[in-house]
Image (cartoon, rainbow, N blue to C red):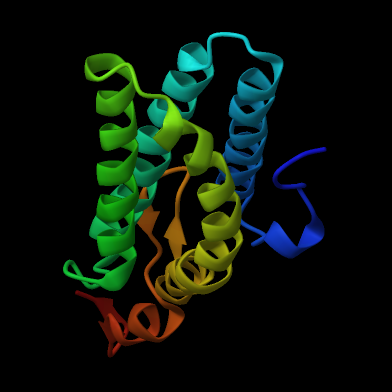
Length: 156
């Protein structure tokens, strides 16, 4: 049984973010499967950590590019999750203690849907409001601004 199942409730209709979230669900379940099987969980955990760092960097880049509040609770959650993941890695590598690793998958399985529904959905909405294209990294000029750029037949 999976800790978290990908479902339509996780879809935000932003293809790159939806794909990233789907991958995170798979990695959370992969870590759980490695732990359950008795296999070395470190490769699965490190893959989850690497993915999470890239996932959050992607969102942080979008926030910076769109003028999303620089000091916001969304970014704070990213920092907290990464701090916990780094501590889990430290416990495993330096202290040879896998107990935190056995807990983190279940915690992330609870956290991700709530984070996506509240924080990521707000970011996706903000991106759409400012006309941000995550593929190009550009913000489209709003139609109202474009129509005011020209006056008297002359464009500024």
